[in-house]
Length: 474
Image (cartoon, rainbow, N blue to C red; front, side):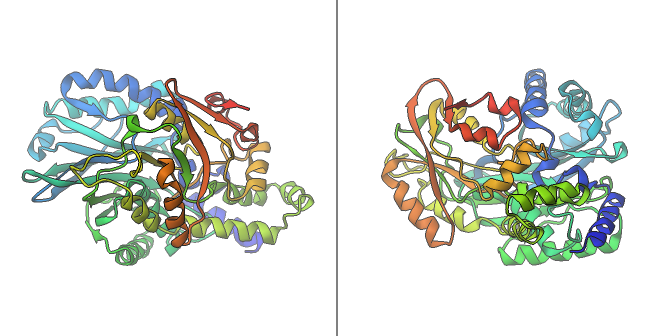
């Protein structure tokens, strides 16, 4: 793509409410989890539980028992802050048991946990006035540069009939764009966004009876139609059913969905059953956002290209790596889901510490930090012997130049599988058989205090001191 053409594309995206030069692409558009979302949710949770409104700890998806007659989904979109338009009587009439949400918040307020609470808290408090038990199983928060585009979208879930065998997993991930150097309605943009939200189902080994309820918006109806047609194409490719629900009227460009799937197997949430010696397996190296963000940064800073050329990376090579990253992001990880599912117990079957996967997570917005989260969930000491990155040189450069604070992050990223040593080789072989490039990169060395030891080279790829201090570098 010619430089002049790129600048025109940048102007176009700014009209759509995105400044691609701010590098808010893919999972980089999320509100900071460690600094903002987690502290805010901890404070909100305590106030709401007395009213039977429960906010789950961070999970890849909401997981609950399957029911014989399926479920209903009702979508509502609300204003944030004290003038929120939540109607508790409406919630009573829906009678939901669970909810999935995506919140879009003005970027000025996205760095402060207390300001986040001031905007989001009133919505939850008003919902709790319905005085019916609601479990918020998955929340997702993204940033907008326009204050008038703030909203909270809730997909309320009402299971029907008695519980039966198997599980349901539900998730929402909504972003603005994958690759700002392409048109927003292109198939790779749509496939990347939808694959990203399905990732949190696939990482649990859930890939059957898939349903997609799109969260799509654009300033022009013609663009909405193009995106919607590509959503249909994507759904057909993975044999998913589309559920048409209300489209947000706020937010100039939104790509995402609430997704639901089922499995006869128990999800890999056996955190406290992990055996010492269990291996950490990445389904492939990670860090997809580095080449995209370096490529974008090179548009406005010519010296970046000069520095990369000195390191042996030409503009042609950089563009090739950027396209490789976008292709990976746009490819659904359904084959990895099938492999994970193979090593899980059936619902009702006893977990076997020698045969079954203990836990999984995907390497997206938080990047390598998800290993620390796993250590806390399993209450174990983990030792990493390598940091498996797709583009280590670009990740190092992106970190050194502060282009992104965490160059291990991705979108629709790789999975990390915690599995007993007895089946680790089998899992690696199965992943290779579906053309993935798995890497065994760590081990559970003992139970007890959560701790993650990582090679000192991690500091080459993460500039965020708040993340680095959660690791013991050696």
